[in-house]
Amino acid sequence: MMPKNFYIIAILFLLISFNYGLAQEKGTSEVRADEAKNAAGEQISAGDASKAVTGESKNMSTGAAVSKEVPVSEEEKQKSLKEKSEDAVANEVIAEGTGFKFTSNDLSNKIGEVLPPAVPRFVLNADDKYKIAEDMVMQKIISLELSSGAVSSNAAYKEKIDSAAKEEAVKQFFKGSGDKDLSSGADKIKKLLNDYQVKTNEAVLIKIDKILTMPEKDLNEAVFNFNGGAVTLKNIKEEYNNTPVPSGNQLNSAEFLKSIAYNLLCNKVAEIEVSKSGAHNTVKADKSSVSSNLDSKVKENWREFVMGMSEVSSEKYSDKAKKDYYNKNKENFMTDSKIKVSHILLNDETSANQLFKQLTSKNFADMARKYSMDTVSASLGGDLGFLLPGSFMPDAAGRLATAEVGTILPVLKNGNNFEIIKVTGREEAKVISYSAASSSIDNALSKDDYEKKLNEKIQALKNKYNVLIYKDRIK
Image (cartoon, rainbow, N blue to C red; front, side, top):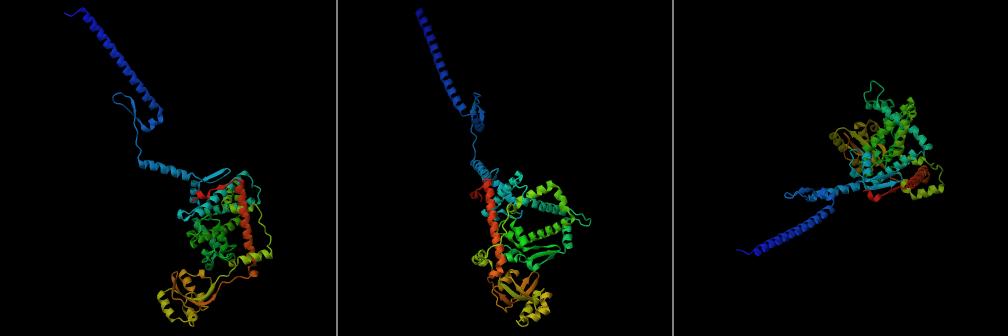
């Protein structure tokens, strides 16, 4: 039998052991709580944004929120960087001034407006794009000038009212037909041109693709003549220069220039027609229509309008000034080299080749009278007189360039026909005398003055609106 004291000691030992165990458990719980608190603090400091990116999931055993990172592929990263880069380029400012700002995207949209749909954009170089950007800037400046009322009393602006009224009347004229027998605008144009007895000068028309390099003195030839007026090479060149298109590409082609010539013809004839009827006065009375059309016209032809804001000197130039200009620019006062030829025109290649074998320098004129389809020149022994090298088809022009007088060229294709050409004379290019060039010199000096004053006016307007055009950003 155990002593009584033993049981008392055993009970005390168990109590002490129990209390020690509770103390240890409490200490461990507090440590765990502190660790959990620190972890939660770190998670909170990461922010709610971390949750949006990484997402959350529930711990299966505890139900606590656990952060989980969603991986982003390299392809997605590159795509995002590319989109940001493209947006930055599109929104890059290429020109700015007081009251306006243009971005690369604005320039791209403008190019889409001025280029015909069939023309690819790669034909434009940086200089072409810069010119279009400058057009955007100047059109905006003119728009600001108009809206501010700064030019409302300007003589040039008033003069444009008539021009705008006529243009609007012409548009209305072509919109519909007042004649029951005409079913379309095309029919109306055809009838109109017929009524005005339009005649085409084919000999001048074939020079149309040379107008950008032709001497000023040769631009007065008419491509179309009609009752009441004409369309000259000079008219076509001026219209081309007012069209903001690239230089040195297919837009300089004969077909494009012919389309300009045809549009000019239709508009000129229609203007006469609406003037007769007084339709432009009716349009002019509608101020809102005229104003809208005018503002558009002024902005499109801002160079002409800017120059209209100041008089161009019409003073005569001194003899000394003219002689100095003449001596420094003699290459601009040269006659063109010309070739005198005769030809025989046939519609059958076999017959042409057979005839060629029979031709000699002596019998050419007689053969032309007898066989040529060109009845006008045939009566003259095939003589076409002196012609410019550009008057011939490319194949013929190449052979004629080195052919000596008296040479008969082999059969050449000319459209659907065939021709045999004989060189009968040559006239080499030479410098025009000072007296003969006098009026051309006046025109050249006047043009130089015009360009100088235009540039001064443009710069003054740019300064007024604090214009900056960033050429290095236009690519």
